[in-house]
Length: 425
Ligand code: ASP
Ligand code: MG
Image (tube, rainbow, N blue to C red; front, side, top):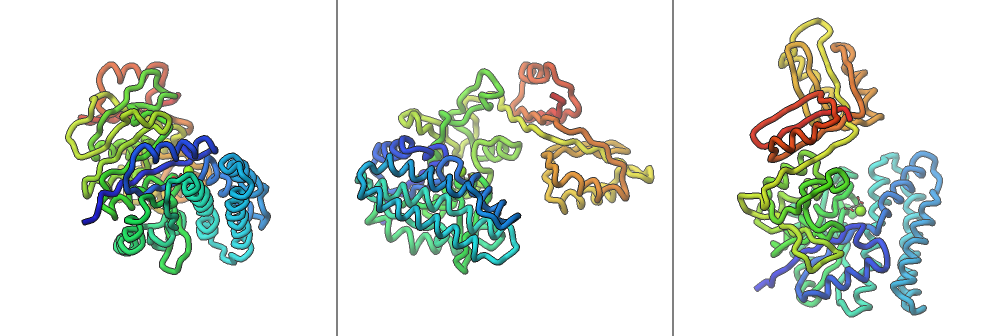
């Protein structure tokens, strides 16, 4: 009989200092169970590694950020391992990884930015998990460190790799399950995978939630817990709305809808693999681990049923009308959509009238000129920038009136559950 397995995920903010790593140990010690612990890179390491990649790609220069990354982790190690000998062991591992990064930078001949990115940025998680696994073993939380590039099999679509499920399930069955009976805790990196040739890939920024969900699916976990610096799911970002409410429980479908509209609670791909085999997802505070948090699971109702607010800044609105005075018909819409698809644009809102078609999407200074160029043969295009898209799910009259105060409304769209406003701030 296979025993119950739990998956837990710790993000960058939960492992950003020696104190934070100690706290991870305390949380793991709160209960005794078989688990897979998925960990992100420490603090802002991924951003720093991105800078290393960018400078190398542009100018073949080694960014001082690499030295900063080494220093940051060394400081942390000093606090985690106050005794010289233990420190020396783990610091050796760290130094080897830093050297490996330099070797790879020098050896990669490819001009493929995404390939370079995945080879280098994936080291953030390799560093964090090596440190934490060693620390936990040293502190008596016996664990086995595994490498996600050997387990999560993906295609070679670097920076946004697609998971190959059958191979991944097979790897989990042959490489994780046999170990979990002797090691109660398996430590593994989030965010990264590997091709069948053994090359590192990444699953997209903030992808560790998704990694945890993939592993939970493959081992048919009892639950997935994501440890966060907030008390659970809130109905709005507290930086935007004064009074927020904690959602106690949320149906999977609702979580998918919220992340579709831009709520940044969890990586959008996280829910599906869980929903398919009914694994509950707990979101809990690593600061107050004894508190209940929120759960996303198979149920009908949101509890409590409050309005959810989602804000998206830096929106751009294109108003497109055909140059030949024709109406906005299917042929014209297809032309516009082709241009948007070609430029990888995700439309957040659209509206059309007889002679004009409006689309709203995230502003991106690199892409806008290309889109305008591609549209200019057939269309006149006007645009507004720096707009905000506000989505209210399960709206009520009061919430709608309140949110529009002091704002100029450009577009409104409403159905039974959701209202969206595109506004000038
Ligand atoms: N470290 C990666 C990132 O910051 C993955 C993650 O944190 O989920 O994007
Ligand atoms: Mg991160």
